[in-house]
Image 1: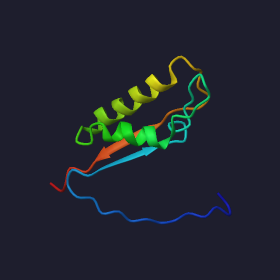
Image 2: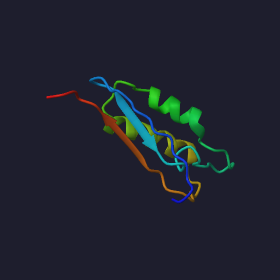
Image 3: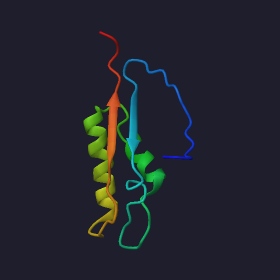
Length: 89
C-alpha cells in the first residue's frame, strides 16, 4: 500500500511459546445491546487456559465470543490464528 508505514519487529520464541493473531472482528463482535466484546474479554478468554494447545485456545476464544454475542447478527468476520513454537528438531 503506497504511503503506508509499517514497523518491523523481531520476536525470539522459546520452546512452548505461543502467538495469537486476530482480526478486528474479534474484539468488535457485538451483542444485542451493541456492546463490544473488546480486548479485555478476549484476554480473559486467552488466559482461561494459557497452557492449552493452540486449537483449544482458539476454541476457548470462539466459545467466549459466541456466548457474549448470543443471537446478535454480526457484520464482520472473526479470524484467529494461534501458533505454538515446538523448538528445533
